[in-house]
Length: 244
View 1 (tube, one colour):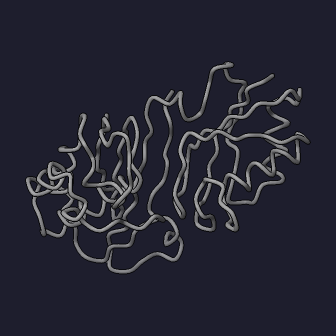
View 2: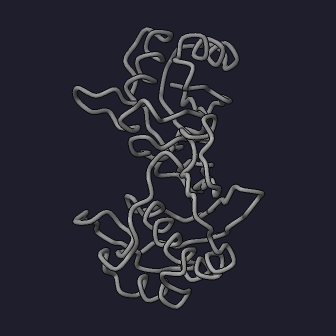
């Protein structure tokens, strides 16, 4: 039995997230249905990250098992010919027997995109948070330093979401400004639901001068969601990649 591993890119705008749901168009159901058409048998798709409704991916990783001998190039071409144009297979490989897209992951990287100028772009509106007021990028960058390392991220999780542990390790936290674009990049061993979007929403409070870096740290240390900023919208968020 082969263990097929694929890397996907997708625009999440028109989907209710990755995970299959009744009476909703999801990425998992759409992708699995296309795989099953080609292989002519049911498949169980395992995904490295369960992106939320409206979130995009540059490097989602999935795996599934099949005994079909279809070569990887033919499988990639076949999937891309049948999938909706907002989902694409970037590459395919045969993985080890024990590989699991979710449980074998060492870290995940997300990037959040902010367009910081007076008017939005009709070409970027699906993929960025448009913020028309000036942001102090230097202060935002300084505040972001506080999330590096291992912390309890309860202040940045979805309200009332329950976890066995809310501790995660952030291995990289960076903010880059290129022209009118601001990118928030975070690599961590795992993410709580809405964690990245709540970090960004609180960073924007810092960028507006509503709190400073120490205030951001106080939010993190408080473990209280109500002390953090608003949840940034999903459409500015991308799953950049997963490391194994």
